[in-house]
Amino acid sequence: MDPQDFIDSLYVALLDQGWTLNDIDSMDIMYYLKLLHKKHSSKKVYIDHIL
Image (tube, rainbow, N blue to C red; front, side, top):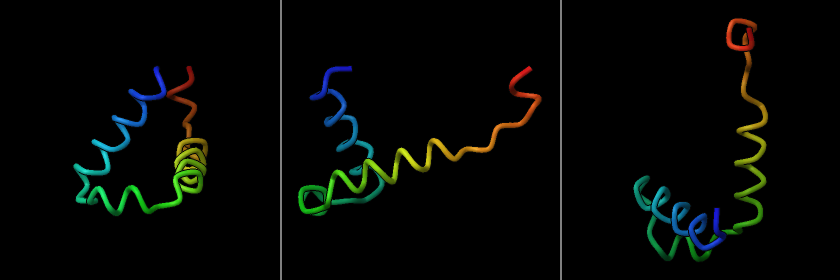
């Protein structure tokens, strides 16, 4: 995915959740991305989904 496409999709997702452009522009984006990574890497996986 092109970096600009990723940023655009991130903005759209946050706007859909009720964020304002000012909220998005003033947040710590690197910390937000670290939190997203942590959220996605800590998903529970059940044996039924693996087999």
